[in-house]
Length: 240
Image (cartoon, rainbow, N blue to C red):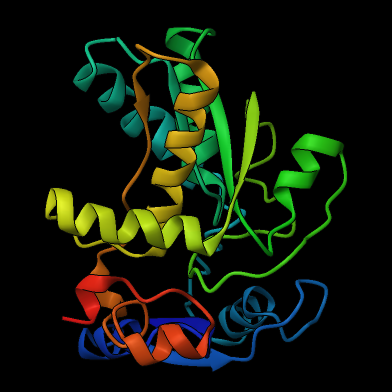
């Protein structure tokens, strides 16, 4: 297995993939329009490798279909059909679009919200019709600058922009109050779910996704020196 990823991904992720036998190709972060972008790099490697299959996770709509067929029915079943809203951030777009399309099959009244980190362009696209990024984020795996094939046609009803500070507040609240150790994309998702709950009002059931274990970020999000170097607040629990 050959995995192409940016060299900014956490060391824990890189070490885990190598331990599992993957060959990593690390590239510098760059715009999608640049031929050196990791998506284009992975495509070229697949084309040049005999017998290779290019997973193409951003634009292979089997991704979205899996969420339509499995994740959305699971959410509907586990909430007993009592769900009012769903929101999450976008990496490939498969989760948000697939769950959104799947839930809308049960009830068109379910509100589907985009939760976007700073530095991504989708908030402006769905709010103002313009793919325009503002700010930046240290979150990994989310934040998109284009409409992927998986995201195309997603039934977005509302959108929220969440800062790293807001996301980190939820990361450490989940750790202290719920015993859940998660990464920043999960914290941003929870902050988005709170924003959707406030928008919809009391008595609503809101669902989001916790996709990234915090153990992948011990050298970054849970490292006071790293947080300080990024200008991010260090929670009291990391100063004990």
